[in-house]
Length: 84
Image (cartoon, one colour):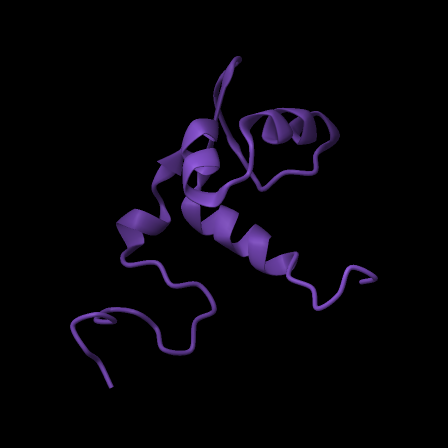
């Protein structure tokens, strides 16, 4: 059942993003830290080892993360225990 709160959302989707525009919004490392609690420093260090969500290199010193890619990356890392 569609309500105003979930209008436009796929009821079977794991990721709840309000619109395609929001899913494609590019986030800076500061945005990711503010919205998801993943520190800018961790993102910087992980980028050197390739252990980050897919990123878009805007320039030599600037990267952005597509919200949908970040959400999918987080879902891939969901575990039930620390031994997984």
